[in-house]
Length: 245
Image (cartoon, rainbow, N blue to C red; front, side, top):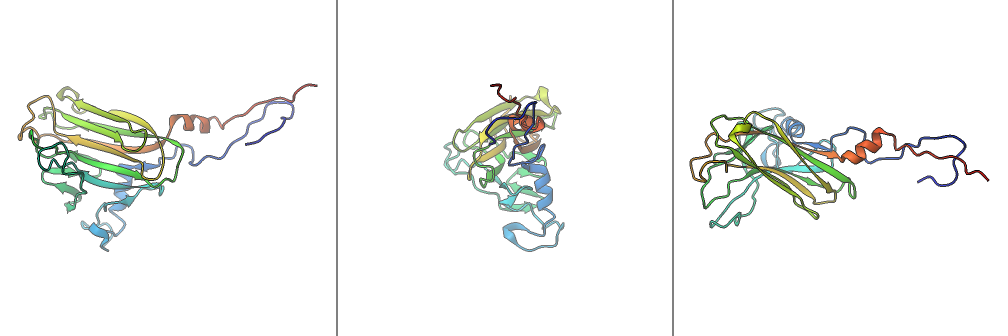
């Protein structure tokens, strides 16, 4: 911080910032596409870059080195909600992560079957390494239901760490092919995490046959907060005049 008296007339001071103006910290689609061309397959295996075996490997880095991406599912285990935990998906098939009938691709996300004793959420998760510790960041997800035959899907959008925030949103059949965007602000620290999940619950009965037409486009981005971006756009202009004696 600059202290002391200013010379006569207004001046502008551009203060240092942890990210460049307009920079995207993490982008689920762009980072995925980078990962499938880096020559690293499932489990860190060395493969031909850009080949079908070149996976968006679990825990691959985002484009700014601020965190990592993983691809997981919710598992009910004994019938209690998510009592089976949230394991990472291990099957890479035809350029996508698959668990049962659930799928995660670069921008495609589809849940598996639903029943009263299952919690088949399929989700992507960004986990911070603390590169922007103490900064307020914004998580932005855009989701679009893509099947007119679906009875609807449910978006689960969560910040998982301290000061956690959450949006659970039913996307109805009337909203098919309408991109919907939601945002959550959060403070960054190492281990902070954001997830975007799709569950098959719609407007119809919660049973084992209402998921066949459930599919969505999903893109999750981590951005500088709007407040930080506004300050950067304005150059953090500081004005003042010499005090008159």
